[in-house]
Length: 276
Length: 183
Image (tube, rainbow over all chains, first blue to last red; front, top):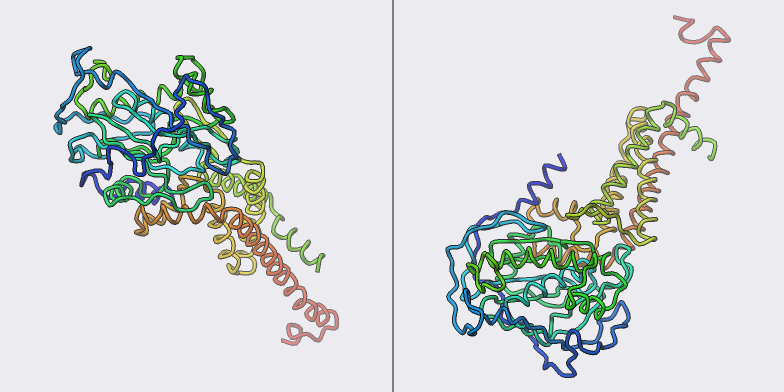
């Protein structure tokens, strides 16, 4: 009886998407990128207490690929029309197609919901940022760590996306951290984001991600254990240098899945981020 | 009192299936707690078990207590026709499931979702549960212990009753003046 109940509950209620994402093109409360230390530049100290947020590094991440037009490799794109009649991809990793209809809006909405204490969210943010870099410029973000000892994980380094700003021609990104390090409520959800949660996250779990109102994923695509105990600079440096470690491979694979769904939503733009 | 409880235990575990039931119940509870609490997770490259030592100890303790409770409960149902402690066991299971939840607990939120709670309502619920997870584990263990004690007392009482009733019969049979002899 119990499995039946669980399956019914997990199935959610609706299949169609409604309303534009609460996704703004940048997270609220953007901070100026003061004292910036970019990836690959001298690292800022990351040894913050596990139960308190690490100090922001206001790092800037940018992908030249996102500036390129589809089918071209030189001139920057200044205008792009979002296709709404797009193909729906099959499930991959934690993601599944939840609607055939994209959410309305000029850009592809991408909503991420996590919690600051959560090691699974910390892991998933790495893949999210790697995917977002292909489609725009993320700036003003900081460094963060999940709490020590949750589910036996040591602190997992990650991005603090709350003060970040994301500029993209293609993607409207919204990050909401619903609980802080002490499990106290943090970011309120917009009405559209609540709709996403009610429809596609019926058990109210996190990390939770919705891409284009069509694809939803609950949980991490890989284990936080691959990142636990490392510093932000170590992981970021390994990713930037293209080093192959279990952690970077897991992040890259998950980022590819996210990017593939975004590419399906953008109709394959930009070409450099969405190889045929 | 101790001998009565020991007798109740021996009654509950008089048959081999009681041990099997205890093992199966404990194992089922362990799996349920690990799965629902996300301590046991499946990734594309395989499964992983991750738990803080205290959390794992709590899960093992709850599973062991539940394994002990189950044969006692069955025995109480069969011998004493008493299901009084079943509520305690059920509540303890519920609190145990809530006590080992981190970020995407499954069983209880899924049941609540089925009962009509929305995802956003369960976000708040899961956050509150997360804040009190340690306390919930303690309550769960306490309820299981209480249920076990209550069941043992029930079983001890049910064992004592036939003996007390049979004694006058034995005496009357020996004297030859019992009701059966007279009829």
